[in-house]
Image (cartoon, rainbow, N blue to C red; front, side, top):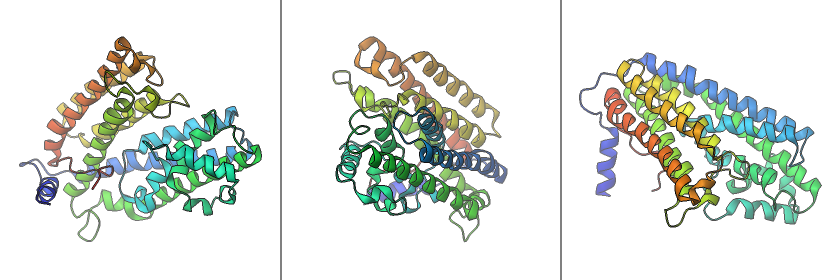
Amino acid sequence: MKKLVLALGLFCAPLGAAAEVGSAVLRDVVDHHIMPRYTTLAERTDALAAVAQQNCAADDAALRNAYHEAFDAWIAVSHLRFGPSETDNRAFALAFWPDSRGATPKTLAGLIADADPVGRDPQAYADVSIAGRGFYALEFLLYDDQISTMGDAGYRCALVQTVTADIATQSQAILDGWTSGYAEAVATPAEAGPYRSTEEAAQELFKALNLGLEFTADTRIGRPMGSFDRPRPNRAETRRSGRSLRNVVVALTSLQDLAERLAADDVAVVAAFDDRFDEALAIAADLDDPVFAGTAKPQSRLRVEVLQQSVAAIRDVARQDLGPHLGVASGFNALDGD
């Protein structure tokens, strides 16, 4: 308990005598980073659900393309784990991963084997375990050799339509939460709001940046790496749909935008971020390993390690330069345990 109290104290305390965060920075992040990305997510998930109504076969090209477009939109906001995305566990309902116990395929297999009526009812589907919902469940339905072919084809079709409708509903609910007041609460902190000062709002945004960088380095890249003696390429995120590296690139591109907007009035910090992000994205572009299969071979594994190290270098800039500039510390994040 004493350690927790100490950590909370560090989380809340400003660092040194850094300049007060300008309200223009908060407004810029909300208007030009957060809102456009959540709008895109709502639009693309709505389009995904519409495509599924017309084309529900797992191997349908239009459906798979809509899946990738919508998934890109999710990855671009996946670091913003606060506010409306956390209400009713919406973010976890959209993205239940890592799934170390294999709960997603078990849940889906059970629904399909029983032809459970809930799989035909988008409204009732909100009560299904989060392991059976969201983008990662949809990947199994479209790309997993067993799940995408088991049971009755008509039921699988209905389940795809239900899961995509649920994804669209959750995405729209998050956007509605931002447009109905949360955006203004972040952009213009007030004593009665969730953020009482510009520093508190900046703390939340800085936390989101660190969350995205940490998750990308330690989980998206680190999970398939495992250890040198025991690599785990089959644990790569969305390997079935071939987008493990793509997720890293989309995440880094979005995080670069957030980082540079937060550092907008410090040219040196912006330049440092620019160099580190560009380096990481260049390494990713040269990797030619879409699902991190190379982690199982010493020579190609080294290249994945270099990518991970490049993301760690971005985190160093955030902690050592951006944090003091904003007068905040990283604190806890939405993925931390109790």
